[in-house]
Image 1 (cartoon, rainbow, N blue to C red):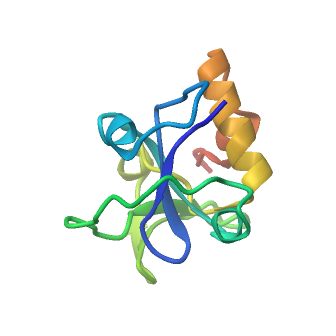
Image 2 (image 1 turned 30 degrees about the vertical axis):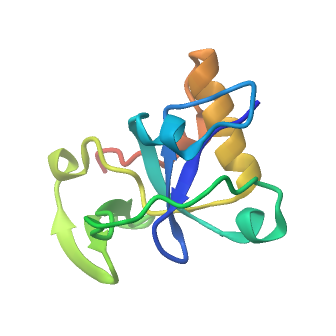
Length: 130
């Protein structure tokens, strides 16, 4: 089957709540809501491991605000485009954790979503009270 994503910049990619048994059109994908946006290599797009189907223009792009947690101190931070600001757990609620995802991890996360089960990596990356 096919999923769908859009490359926002060299590392930031948004993935859609979309799957199809046949190669979708750009118009099919355009209607789908964004499921998550993460940092990942664009290598699968460059090598053809992920099939390119077209181009959706980006007119309203602003780098994603990610949350991260210091593994030693437990301090939380919001990070956007290289800038970091202190954060609370409430600030991080609903945000993606700043982490690099590889193509296998992305595919596992999408498969988990469509199977209705939690993704272990996404859950393990969530910040917790220190």
